[in-house]
Image (tube, rainbow, N blue to C red; front, top):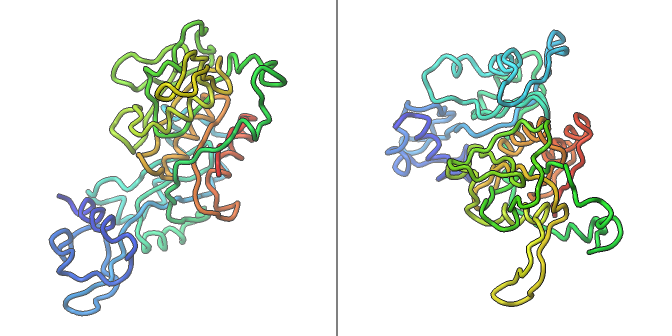
Length: 333
């Protein structure tokens, strides 16, 4: 097991004790002294040390003036010059070693910057670089839901909802826990092909995507598949764009017709959450793709209250709106 994996294990075990006292007898089997990408910042005594362990930071940078005319290419064909600029911010002791990669994600649409596994000392080195703006540890956001139909003032078979052609021709990008593609809400019966502008991917191992569920991708969390392990993403995707399903019920109760807000819209799914929470680094990576490929951004995630300039979902949605005039459907508490 290499030093980075050992450091990650200790970080998970002692997350709330970061930079506090770590008794050697509790972690020396995982982190032998002098081995790993952490730093011993203080030798307290023969049995305890203070460790500076790496964690994922969100880093904002400015781009050089020479980059201002660079084209913004898609996530699958990244701008190598821009990404080389990001790599230059990693401390040389990281960039030149054989450790596992520290770069987590690189962004070009939601903002200029990246996420990387860094220690406090690494960040101090970055702060000396021209073009550095800010760095802070990423937050983990929880899965949410809300009464979005009431918020939008939509009423069944009347008003705007009935007159809106039910989202026909629109692509909705859902950022959540994935999807169960065989659910009847995502049947493509009667659905036209996706718009010609659609350039996305379907990363299921079997051909389950169709004219309704036109794309599905997964990021670093989960089981290596866009499949939904918790049901939350399937629920939110159905709320956003589930087709009319007659005879829907809960164990024989509440029989009726189930339908989403935009039943004729196409769905592109982005799995970026585990069964309980979602990392900001993955959320922004998915937003980068949505801005390139989709029309509507649907998110049902949230966390504790933070200032606007520290709220990465708000900043990402604001950037999306400015880039593509992308409407936001933010289902957040």
